[in-house]
Image (cartoon, rainbow, N blue to C red; front, side, top):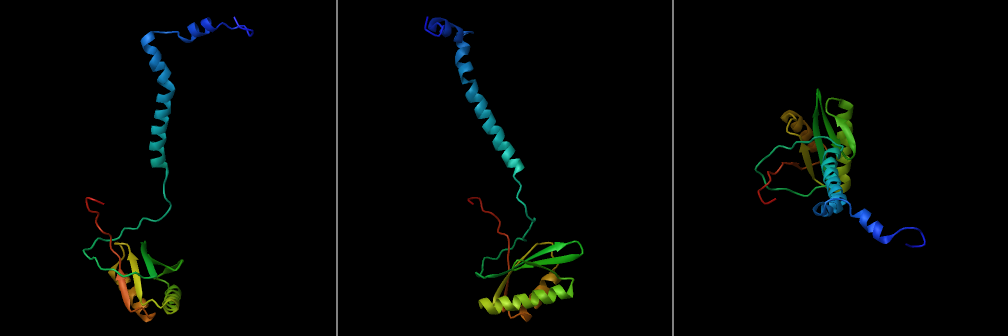
Length: 158
């Protein structure tokens, strides 16, 4: 017996209660619980992390040519109108004032950067007429080349 009143032999006997073959499993319970919690957090983290943004679905095509450009316009359809995002600004193609602002900003950026190519990232749901209208606005703004982006199909090794 020690000065604090506990007996080492009695303590060892009390901690070894139960069937002998079950003791290793009882000792592993905290590790099993930890593994299950980690697995659960992995499943939850995959379903709870949603990226804020807009679904943008580029059409597929068989082209491989491309040019690096600083002028990029993103075109998205919205019920009843078409949105154009360019240089951190949003423009409506149905509004004449917005189209004029887009044209002047595009001409200003083309002159400032010296870029003569515009990359258009258009959703596949955008009407071809709207794309031609954007191309005409860009041509009036001093852009000489218009590039349309495409979505590449993933190969097996990618």
